[in-house]
Length: 247
Image 1 (tube, rainbow, N blue to C red):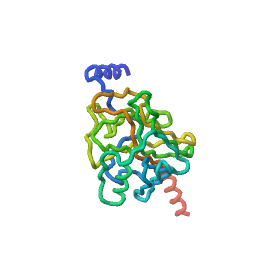
Image 2: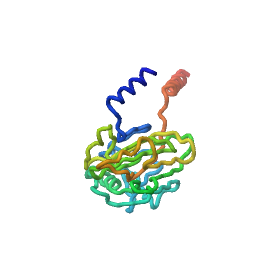
Image 3: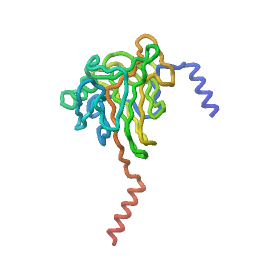
């Protein structure tokens, strides 16, 4: 352990650190290039942050946050339709619907004093059930927005950017054909899951030219996860089937 600590300190001294680098403590950050990039199975909640009406993607209807489904609530100080450039995912109806979802945002201005409140969402869940949370994040302009994601009071991502993961040398380049998705699987510990986006904790917001402290999101989904049978369970079922055939 001492050798590992000394090696870490040595590398830090030689290479330095970057406060802008994205740290994913739980879950994953993925690219979205069309409806197939978003898991829309076993959906409990699907909500878009938009002044417009619902949109349906792969048979799942995204309600608007102004008329949310029962059990869902959210807050965020600013709402904007048709933000910057609409992404281009393809020519199908599902492609077009997802483009519309990614084109609108709810956002918070945390570069002022006092800063505006975080973006938040709360959803009723069943304790003991596994869920998959997905946050749809637009990158509709080649800028560098940086903020944090918190789930149930835990910092799950520090310094995500609107263009994806910053490895320390800057975020990925802007692409008209790409959005961002944060995905997180969790076991519900109580009857409500709470999500927040903003300048919450971890490494300080790096600031500097070309950076923006304002968190944005276009949509959010929550789905149940059906556990796959374990190897032991499958072996037991096979043995039971063999026993029945012998009888």
